[in-house]
Amino acid sequence: MQYQVVLKKMITELDEEVQYYLDTENNFLNLNQLLDKELEISFEGYQCLCCGKEKKIFRQGFCYECFYESAQVGDWIMKPELSTAHKGIEDRDLAYEKKVQLQPHVVYLALSSNVKVGVTRKTQVPTRWIDQGASKAIEIVEVPNRYLAGITEVALKDYVSDKTSWQKMLKNEIVDADLIEEREKLKTFIPEEAKNYFLENNGKITEITYPVLTFPKKIKSFNLEKSHVYSGKLKGIKGQYLIFEDGTVFNVRNSEGYKVFITIK
Image (cartoon, rainbow, N blue to C red):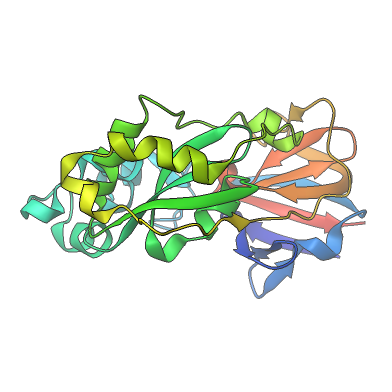
């Protein structure tokens, strides 16, 4: 069976084990059902997720022009502290920026390889945690806009990492940490503007289990542009990665906008 796909980040659903879906041309493919099956992924070209044209992907599924023009990939996306919609100041498209920035955001701690701090829109909980391959996560503050979340993250980065070791995450090499205890340690360092939004009585830890049959001991990445075809037995899915029997891993999100054929053998 073969599917033609313009890759987008996998759709996820929190369950006893995370359910993963790939958006194909006419349907959704449940990837959990493909565990222990041989898959072939072959590169066929590009399609920008913004303009829809068959142009080489520059970053994040966008062609060069769209990446530097679209409001969907402004600097404030990666650096929330640069958000300005709360002041009525436009970056690229104020209407879009107000829609995204002026809604509840969460600053959280997640345990993927190490303890890390991060930011997401409230509506993206727990999707953001799943995309990062977190095994556990807890909310620290819930603020009314992206700017407040951004400056809180920046302040807390001096005391806890904001990065995940993706290799350790995929090998399931996770430090042992008490997220409630870690959260309490950080309370003092929350900026004054966000202190009132600290979730004082929050002891809820979300635990996440991934559909992985075997974790790799050594990891090698598969890049569609360098090697146009890969074939292997699917052994797991974690974060936004497909994990294969020979230790090859494929980052679906990093390949957004790539046109591929996926063949189930």
